[in-house]
Amino acid sequence: MDTNIRNKALNFSIIDGALSAIMGSLAGGMFLMGFAIKILKAAPEQIGILAALPMFANLVQIFGSVIIEKTGKKKMLCFLSIIMSRGLWILIILLPFAIFAPLADFKIWVLVAVIAISSVFGSLAGVSWLAWMSDLVPENIRGSYFGKRNMIASACSMVFVLLGGKFITLWEQKFSEQNPYGFILLFVVGLAFGLLSIFFLSRIPEIEGIKKEKESSFDFNVFFSPLKDRNFLTLILFVSAWMFAIQIAAPFYGVYMIENLKVSFSDITIFGTFATLATLFMMKIWGPISDKMGNKPVIIVSGWILIIVPFVWVLALPGGYYIPVMAAHILSGAFMAGTALSQFNILIKLSPQEGRSVYLALFAAITGLVGAVAPIAGGIISKAMQGFAFSVSAYTITNLHVIFIVSAILQVLTIFFILKVKEPAAATPVAVIMQLKNDLNPQTGVAGAADFMMLELEKGEGILKKIDNVTDKLAEKSEEKIEEIFDKGEGLIKKPLDKLKDFFKEE
Image 1 (cartoon, rainbow, N blue to C red):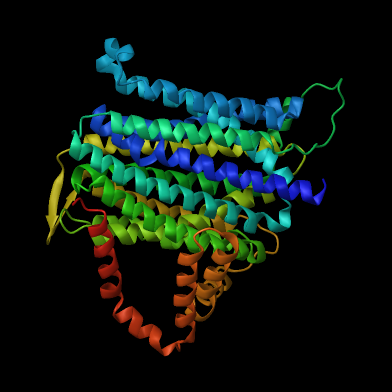
Image 2: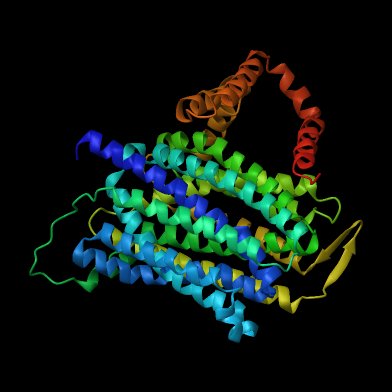
């Protein structure tokens, strides 16, 4: 493929990713959970089912891979599936209206059904998109490219989550928490961005794969080839176990904020904003590290840090949640960026070009099935332990805290599986830690990240120049000041956070 055409296609993919991220932030995530809890009165086990559906839907990727292997039409399958997946959101938008009045007592199950079908089409789109993009993006730049793409998508998501949270808070104060139309307006705007992204997706060309003889039929024995690849099976085992450990608690952090801590949507979106800022900053760092040192050591380092997160959530108390919840979001944003990017890259790296869609589909189906069981298990545990509580000093341990602690213990047990995965030319975790230390040094990493932002984001030039000036001043300080900065860290962090929180408070 011509270099100019490829570069143009890669840019279209970035635009598609940004617009899709906006849809995901407004028509999904915390706002979908808030709609289910506050408007449809969803129980914890129903929240678990909603969280599990996209992962259950990954099972259909096996059928998607059959279509891809038989036809080679990755782009067409992705294009048609994504139209269906996003188009079904029209039914969710119509839920509060009279058309669904006869199903007033079953609207939560209507939501579950629509999300289930939408997730099936989304899963088909996912396997075809992954096979399509793995052909398009050269292997030597995958880490940097997808790091950049994810960073821009996360930035767009951050802005719209922040705006959406402020909007919902204003709407609830003006009307009530039971008024559904604030959520519906967000869903409409999100869907509009999602449909717009399809236009840019359609302009990305498809690279022809390995030609197959027209008369040859699809050999279903190809499905057994990944099962004969011991290294690939080890990767599946690790990701499945790790995903179960993460997902058993992940949906319930939001429930804990809304129901137990009584956090407003404005504050929730502030937390989400800092998580996204951490993701943006670390994507710039993780991409080159994974390209240079491999994906396995990045997964190991990130995984050990993420084990801390559930314990940080346990420390959050009503009326005293701000610092622990903020810390949990920042840690999650920074190090989930590393695991997500590296798992994506190592999956493509260990999948051969011929029959790659089968490898990707089998991986998604198995890990998705395990990951889907996890939030349902979390919901069952939450319901079974409803009313459970005991006090430890000033802290009261509840059913949700138990789920968080179980998640942390399972993460400790599963992180060792990645040690068995063989990645050619991968460095050690210690090398990654040393590189992180260098990249996060104020004299190198922060200033470098600011320079990157100046080059990549042409808009907002004035703000970025201020950031660059600040980081240049940091770079001029000696390393002896670092200890002093850490000692005063709490004061330095709390003051701007309080100002930001006051900014989003109502007049």
